[in-house]
Amino acid sequence: MNSDWTQCAITPAVSHEGYASLGVAVYRASTIPFENAHAYATRRERGSEGYSYGLYGTPTTRTLERKITVLEQGARTLLAPSGQGAITTVMLALLKTGDQLMLPDTVYPPVRDFADRDLARLGIQVSYYDPLDTADLVERMGDRVRLVWVESPGSTTMEVQDLPRIATLAHARGALVGCDNTWATPLNFKPLAHGADIVVEGLTKYFCGHSDVMMGSITVRDLALGDSLRAFLGRQGLGVSADDAALVLRGVETMALRLAYNARVATTLIDDIRRQPEVARVLYPALPDSPGHALWRRDFQGASGVFSVVFTPQAAPHVAAAMDALRIFVIGASWGGTRSLVAPMPVRAHRTVRPWEGDDMVLRISIGIEGEADLAHDLKTFFEALRREMVRHGTA
Ligand SMILES: *Cc1c(COP(=O)(O)O)cnc(C)c1O
Image 1 (cartoon, protein in one colour):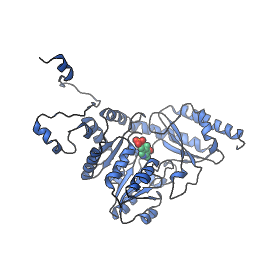
Image 2 (image 1 turned 45 degrees about the vertical axis):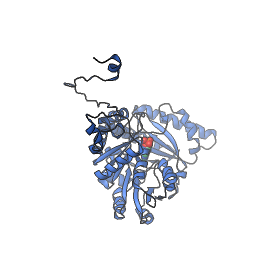
Image 3 (image 1 turned 90 degrees about the vertical axis):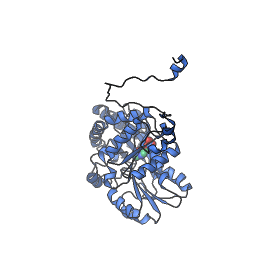
């Protein structure tokens, strides 16, 4: 009989017979025990999908990877600690000194920052191109182009890109194509089916859906590329916890339902917002006058619940003060959750190819799952406060 000390330390085995659950079990691990010394010595032969150490995956993380692989119609998915981490992992794994990286001018600003500071320091040539002009891309691609990055629609200003055309042009130069699909999710757009080699999702947003987990995914068409990316993640010591993976798995179950509601309510509210005299423009791929709308119609299955509002030069300086009137909308950055968000985004400093012509501040709005009438009322209150501010400052 073992001592109490030993009984405390070891875990009793219980029967799993007759047990089933619709939920996904949380398998936590650092150590994976091996049945004998030979199994331990040969653990590396278990391959990239086997289990050998907690960092390299558990059945919980593999379940999430499999689910995303199916949605993206890819060959393999890897998980990273954030969407940003998924993007930097792809770039660091693929690029070496002397290579050229093409980034759309509308790329997620933290990626621009990473490329300008860290990739440039490594001697990688970082070039920006006009997301709406494939001729501009062709002109800027050199002989050493290795990766063409696409983000469609672009951050804040929502330009939809011609991914199939960009992929053809990049592949002709021997470059790979990666696409940030965080806005659309694979429910509304499948980049791998439109020519991309790699698709990245900020799972933090719609997949998780509840604003409480950071995670990103990388899905590839080519198994060998997937294996080398998995090995690179492992060498960097990057992985995700089973608890977080389980939370994202729970979030995905309702993602289709949430997105359909987000898009429907966004469409109704945008109708109203566009009629306000203080609004110069609403940027949302589903609107006929949004940049790249024809490409969105051709390639996408639908829209999500994130759009941007450009105010008139008279109204823009007073938007910040008017935001104090909001009661339901929350001021915050990471969209795609249950709560509706607003965030004033500066644009001009993040554009180097095509200067931004609207007011520097663009209000990004993400629709959550609150009642539609409450959100409409909150926006009405906001516009009333905006008008009061304008009158008070004599700009109405
Ligand atoms: C938020 C976001 C990311 C990064 O995701 P995190 O998980 O927050 O790091 C990447 N791309 C786009 C387009 C995003 O909006």
